[in-house]
Length: 178
Image (cartoon, rainbow, N blue to C red; front, side, top):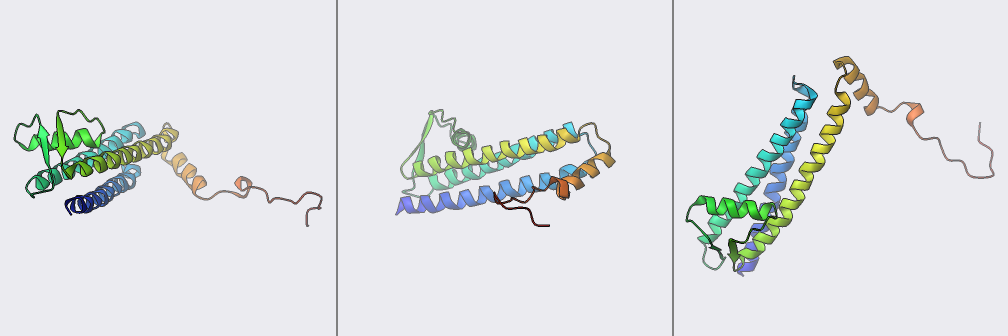
């Protein structure tokens, strides 16, 4: 029964962290083109937004570890604990980033949450890396262009011209229709 409780808690945390991550990256992508800063500096905004998102996600998991400690049968954190909130944040950060130092470990059903957090962290960090790459690609191609040139390039990218569309395929041995 306790594993089911931890599994449900894990599912809720995965859903919450995905929503947090999606919203932070969505807001960043909406705000970036509107910022009156050089394109190169916009990448710092992307990195900062992703970092803030990951810190919030780590804190959410840390709160779950803290709460689970107070429910009998869900498990505990054991090891080099100092007895304050930093223990939970540290353990959560080590799990989320898959660092897994080992000086603090989960015991009991709480071990499931640690494994899920590591997988979730890996996916979310990879998502951030992909988002950063796309943002860098977009803004580095805009670097050095005037605002008018950037607007023209964006409109071309959004609506392909007939020359950019692939030619229709012909079946071999048949003449093209007029």
